[in-house]
Structures are given as C-alpha cells and as structure tokens.
Image (cartoon, rainbow, N blue to C red):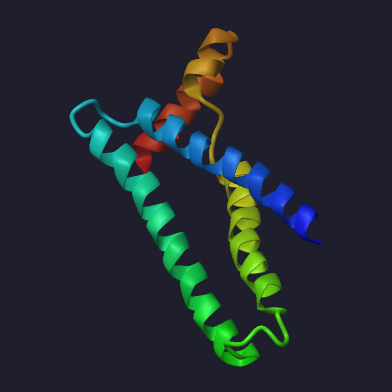
Length: 121
C-alpha cells in the first residue's frame, strides 16, 4: 500500500505542477508572468500543506497520540494522494495542449482556437 500510493503521489506531483507552471509561463503576459507563475505554485503548495496538516490533526485525535494503533499514517498518505490524483484528472481534462507546441506541429487552427478560448476566459 505504501509503495503504490507513494508511486501515485510521485507521478502526480511530476505531472501537475510542472504542467501548470509551464502553461502559466507560456500564456501569461510578460508584465505579470513571474508573479502569476509563483502565485500558482506557491498557492497550490501551501494549500496542500494546510489540508494535509488538518487531516493529520483530525486523524491523530481519532487514533490517539500514542503509537499503540499506528494506523493514522495511512490516512495521511491518502490525504496526500487523493488531491494529486484529482489534480491530474483535472489537468488532463481542462488544460489545453500548448499553443506553441501546436504551432511547431503545424496545427495552426487548433493553436488559434486555444489562444482565443484563453483570451475569452
């Protein structure tokens, strides 16, 4: 269980954060690019830490602070993995492919459609 969930956590962390940072860097205006990029990464990281700490406090209160029944670590692991799996699914469904990549592949109409949809948002 530990190996599987750690593997899922590692894959999801390697997919979500770099993808969102790369697209934020590519698609944001140069005047606010650095602030937006740091805001996305910093906010996601800090929010995740707070959520996992809150879940940990609840689980430690439920299972007890002693290590007689040390099952609370499983809940902490799930609290770290589940949001990342959800984030991977959201990135896959909602984040468009990079317009720059589309242009390099000759998919000009698709790239223009992605840029238009981002501008409309």
